[in-house]
Amino acid sequence: MNDSRNRSFRLYLLVLFLLGVGNLWLAWMWNTARDSALDAQQQYRKVEQIAEQIRLLRETPIQVQEEEKTAAAIVQQVETASRKNGLKQEQLISITPTKPSRIADTPYQKQETEVDLREVSLKQAIGFTVALTEPGVDFQISEISFSLPPSSNSTEIKSTQEFWNVNLLLTSHLYDPKIPAP
Image (tube, rainbow, N blue to C red; front, side):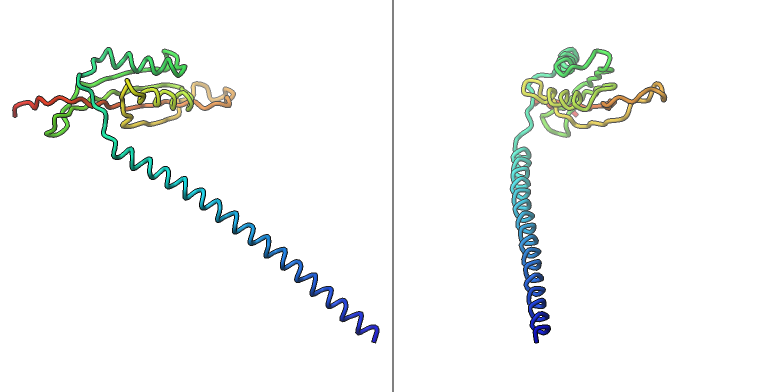
């Protein structure tokens, strides 16, 4: 009788232990699910904010100029942006503005400028592009491409900072209501 009572007691303790472990596991799962739901809500709010920013940017008209920028003015703006971001003169390889061209049958023209940078850090490239889109400069970055510069010596020790060759196509818009005769 004592033996069967001892077994019943052990079984009872085992059941209690398993129920306790089960409750702990359920509490952990519930806590994990709650944390995931809260993270998902935060991410959803961030996505909504970004989507609203995109909607506002799409509704904002492109800023246009009333006068054509001269090649010298474009070069000066690009060089100022490069100096502002710590680029050396030898890193700014070329600045090639084009003549304005009419946008279809509209009173608007666009002027494109190609800019080549060599061996710049990602931080410098981003700072440079931001400086080019500031008010008063009013370029839009139409295209940007990054490529790794060719290695001058394959046995040289790699630095901790990566450098890139960057090609940018800048666009500015001009309001010029004179539509040329066909």
